[in-house]
Length: 349
Image (cartoon, rainbow, N blue to C red; front, top):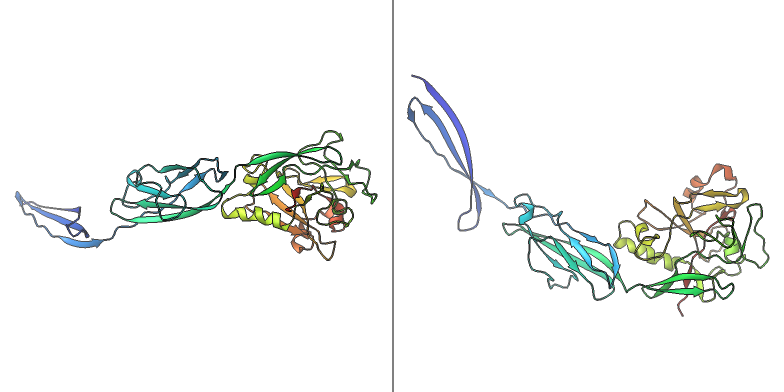
């Protein structure tokens, strides 16, 4: 007699009335000749649902009161529930009142009524009642207001923009006399600068490059410098505002550059080593003079940023790490040999 043996495992997910989940295991064994003997054993194992993982992004990542933000939770997932079955709901102000009902639609559009920092909350629900939440912060500005500043000293026009109650020039200052590459700065009560363009009438978006002495009229005014009356050199408080944007923006540079939502036009302007008439880091890194009332004028500071960093930092030549970034062919390490652009911000009255 020929004995044939066959073992097959069957699994069945069973949910009894008490809602506890069990895994039922059936074991089918043994063919003996023509006689089929069925033995059935049941093993019950308690099964725990894994809650979903909530995830979402926002486009754009910064805007104003006229912006319609699109929140997208399609990256949320769950081990037991197919993604398309997951349901989501949104609380756009994190005030405990949901702004949408549960829905399998993962995108949510919302326009904020108030400026400021808003916490947005997402809740994801799976097929077995499991939930998870995620919050993120969105910075909403007032509707961007722009204007034009006319410098009464030379009638030059500068575009300006108002952000959170403060007016910023959206262009670097270009005031005074342009020097040729073979000329040097002198203390003569005339603001002097270098430019990447030979023509005095036409300059590029980076404006004029001043030494720190020229920017402050040879240390006579290290707060307002040579900015128009009522405006001051970008300072630590202004820088802190930009740094605070890191709460919401993964890469602040994408917000402050010429295509960014703030319209500030901080593009990588580089720096100018005037003793040897050499441009450095243009279109790669940005340096803007930063007003600080330092006890030692040698330790002058600037705002630093580039395309890849997620930060906007304060740096100065007192930091030893910057000595490594000093070109060896520039000889002595000192800020006095560097010319940088100057940006002005309106002083609060």
